Length: 347
Image (cartoon, rainbow, N blue to C red):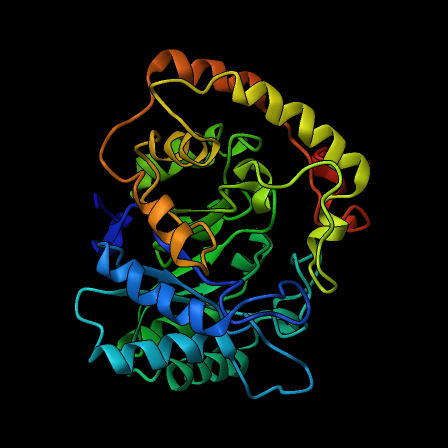
């Protein structure tokens, strides 16, 4: 396993981290997890050298059980059984109080991140994780207009001084990779988590150069495009009831995905043998990225994904070829008015 520095936090993290949205099932998005397998995957991840675990207050959350945080609690159980968190870096997130993703334009921060809500969620996560401090706490949505308010700046500074949180970051709105740079300018934000994959290369235009210049740690999420770039779904795929990808990948989109995956497969050779390797290695070939966090809840995927971390980058020739495979679109919410200006929408 290779390691990189997470920006100005100075934290040393595995360049392949573990995303845990799917880990403990989520009645609103992900279903079908074998909880025993998920738990075993945590141990396998660490055994193979992984040390960066990314979770969230909301992962697995059920509004019928509002005091339960399944993903965080499973990780907390793992930490306890493991005997501590030595060398592990644990990141989680404060959800928006209004439970709206993404943060819409012209919304007041008082509706999204009031001070008492930030404090409550930090304390909730500490309890769920069974720890007395969190390495990285991230705002789970963001609008850069929020920087006009001083409340969030004061409360996160206070929380850091208390020792409950070491560093703060932002999980940027889907397909809005630059909607966080003003917040970084405050000096209070150490990391940005953002969607980055072969299809969505927009972050290379502004976010990556900014992060390099300002020493911001970059956490790349959705590296396999919710499974699309893994080559395991396509035309005819049937998703389980409750799996949000049934709306993310409509039949028409699956047909288009098949076409694009077919073209990507033509690039497989001795340099990269599988689509997963191609997708992850492409991200890690960008030095600005600190870690990539594919969602993993099966041991076989832990082993497959971590195998990519060997320090080898893609050739310049292949990197140039992959620029031709951009497919900018937003499959998450075509009806979200805050996304209309991104021009990433596709039916």
